[in-house]
Amino acid sequence: MKIFLSYASQDRAVADVINHALLEQGHDVFFDRDDLPAGEQYHSSIRSAIERADLFIFLISDHALDAGSYTLTELDIVSKRWPQPSGRLLPVMLRPTALDQLPAFVTAVSVLESPGNIAAATADAVHVLAQRGRRVVRKRATWALLSFALVAIAIFAFMRGTSSLPTESVGVDGAPVVLVPAGPYIMGDAEPSPQQAPRETRDLPAFYIDRFEVTTGRYAKFLAAHPVVRPPDEWELVDMTTQRELPVVGVDWADAHAYCTWVNRRLPTDAEWEKAARGTDGRRYPWGDTRPTEALANFENAAPGGYSGGLAPVGTHPKGQSPYGAQDMAGNANEWVADWFVEPAGEGKISSQPLMGTERVVRGGGRMDDAERIRSTMRYRDAPSMRNEQIGFRCASDDVPRP
Image (tube, rainbow, N blue to C red):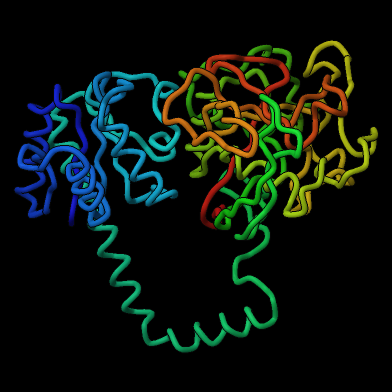
């Protein structure tokens, strides 16, 4: 396996030990940068090495996350080459670092932590990934005899204008999910502001997103499996006999990320959330351009307390669903997404998504917000540690979730 080992210069000693452990396994590791020419040639050589690699190992430390560290440039190259990092990225924790301090691209996969020999743990993890890759190759070889039939079926499906991906499925937590097909869509608004990106056409690969916000009933199972996790704010007010279909709120970004990881999914990106909410035609709301009503969304609801009157059970407003069948994407509970918040760079421009930041994007508007604030283009922000009775979340995935 070709491996690119990314580390800060201050961490070279431990990186060298990890490098030798990987070399002993027979891997081809790009490690030593001392012989590279300076300037643009250095950058080009690094980029070429990353593009040739099968696996990118990112050694996490305060030095590697420093704004001036070249490791973040390497990570940015990887994020553009492999937008879906599963199986391609292995983050390794050298020193304890809070998850909400890590780039969203890094937290999209499991971070390797080991209280013991970090070099041995890294080598073991790489061995598992290599074995998994070999199994994939063998499986592909087994299915090679059926390739002609599969191609014929795919062509037939394409000619009929259908997709081979199931449009609906159910995750391991029993949550129904819907398919958002690949292709272009309109993101942003013709009148950009700090809360709205400029209107432009973007393109995304296919992905799945939860039909509903994560409920208290499903989150209770997560808490039961992780007794050390701090419950959401006002969790003691939830009556599981009558309120298990309410969206869970009072969770911070790390809570939401942890839940999605537990069910083998992830938080949707900012761009994915907007496409799932408004489809491809640039509509203002999930249901279209007409202003919301009580039949379409839970909004302008100032009832005191979330669990004790303000929140509506998920799926209460099916007439307000998005073109893909995702519900409650306007009003009810705001939703955490994966990205750090960044303001638009200016008229007609989009700032690139930062690898680090201080606030995460929050989407959808809450049950107290008015009609303007629950539009599908509106983007809000909060510190990742914020727990608010209006903020919940839903999960997404690249592949078909399996129960």
